[in-house]
Each structure stands twice: as C-alpha cells, then as structure tokens.
Amino acid sequence: MANAIYKKIYKKIRLYDEIVIVRHIGPDPDAISSQLALRDSIKESFPNKKVYAVGSGVHKFKYIGTLDKVDETKLINPLLIVVDLPNIARIDGANYSLYKDVIKIDHHPLEDHMGEVEIVDTHASSAAEIIAELILNTKLKLDKSIAEKLFIGIVSDSNRFLLSTSKTLRIVAELIEKGHINIKDIYPKLYQRPLSEVKFQAYLAQNLTVTENGFAYIKIGTKEIDEYHVDSSTASNMINDFNYIDGIYVWTFITYAEKNNQYKINIRSRGPIINEIAAKYNGGGHKLASGVRTDSEQDVNNLLKDLDIACKLYKENIK
Ligand SMILES: [Mn+2]
Image (cartoon, rainbow, N blue to C red; front, side, top):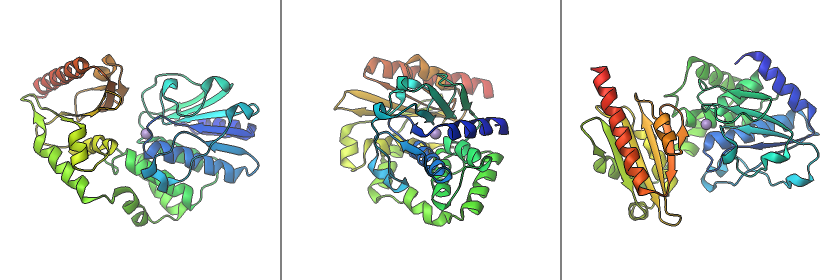
C-alpha cells in the first residue's frame, strides 16, 4: 500500500476524540489482534482520546487482550474503524448507521465500501499485517504488547507464514526488532493444545471422503465433537492442517450445529477458485479459503457437487 493512504488514516485518527474499532462476528485471532493493537497504539499515541475495541469476546482468545464495552449513543461524533471485515452485515457490536465517518482496513476481497478512506489489500496476509504497516509508517506508537498482538494476528492468519509474502516477512522482522518481542514465548499461547484435539485430527484424517477428482470432505456432527471433547470452532479450524496432501485440491469440513440447525462449511483449495462457488450459496471469502453457512441440507449437497466439478475441471486443465 502506498504511504499516502497511511498518512491519510493517521490524519483522520488525529481528528477524532472518540473512536470505536470493530471487526467481524465469530472473530479469529487476526480480527481481535488487529482491533486491540490498533486501539492500544492510538491510546498510547494520543492519551486524551477515548478508543474502544468492541464486539463479543471469545474465551480462548482472552490471552490476546481485553475488549471494551461502550454505549455508542452517548458518543459525540465518533469515528468508526472497521478491521478484517469486508461487509457491513457482519459487523459485531456496533451500529454502523450511527457513524458519519468510517475507515475500513481489510484484506478480504471487496464487498461493501464503508467510508471515504479504505484499505482493501487482498495481497496482505492478514489485517494485522496492514495495521502493522500503518503503525510502522506513521507516528503511531509501537510497544512490546502491541507488537505481540500484531505478530499473533499475522502468524495465525498466514497459517504460520505459509501464506506470507516477502513484505509480510519484512514487517514481521521489523515488529520483532522494534517491539523487542520473543516469539518463542508467544507460540505456546497459540499452539499448545490438548491431546484430545490431536486425536480428533487423526479421526478427521481417517474418515475423510476423497473423490476421484481430488475433492475431499467430511461431515462433523455433534456426536463426534462431544466424543473428542473439542469445540466446533476448533474442529472447523483444523481444516488448515489438511493442505498439501497429494491428489487433494479442494477440501471441505461441514460442521453441523444442532442447536440452531446450521451447517458451517469451511472450504480450502490449493488450485480451483472457490469463493465464487461459495457465493452461489451466500457464502464468501478468499479465492482459496472460503466458507458458507446454511440451514439447507440440499444446499450442502449441491455445494459439494459444485466443488467436486471444480476439482474435475482443474485436474483436466493441469494434465
Ligand atoms: Mn483476517
């Protein structure tokens, strides 16, 4: 991203006394790290500003930091900053229509324009990478805890740098040096897990269905999740551990939640473009990492068929 946009964002932040930072519902470490790092950096740079990072908290990401509660209706002409989120509908914990001025900072393909100043950089590994660049290129302050948060966002959204660019690595090097962080202290917080999760991962590998076209999928029900004592988001996130398997181009986990009769479908690819297929079923995401939520079993089955066909076409083309 050009330096000019960062200066523009910095100027806008300087203008406002009250700022609310939001991200998507069902947050991941990148979403939470991005909003907390940006909040802390603005507060440190401008101690008189009131800055709130809002949205519902997730217990297992508590180590990243604490979120804020705010009565938006009591704020006077606040600025809204939306991070790691392409569409207004999935904003967690803020009423978008209350804000006259909005800054959007995201790395998902563009869905909704939100304000006059926005960064949509699909080449960035993570929203945290963009926030880091913003901080490193303006007078916004960086300290150890802010650098740690940004590192957590980048390392988790890039799947431990599998999806990084030279720029990602340059920014990470700068964060480590300027923030004096010790990455060995951070990894246990991110990656230490109970043995039951490893066993569940083995169960997934054992029970994956693989078609002749190189499409793999597995349906995960409440029964399996209970049996292995994993929670459903942990289960669906394990999809990232199934990349680079010989002969598998697209792989999909379908997690069914009985309580709201919803199928959460996670899709990953290392070739065929999948976000256009996901969009057919009101889903979305990146070209190679997408998701769909639906209550229709018929939609699930049609989606699986479409993904299988995409693999077939892909396979024919690479021969
Ligand atoms: Mn992200």
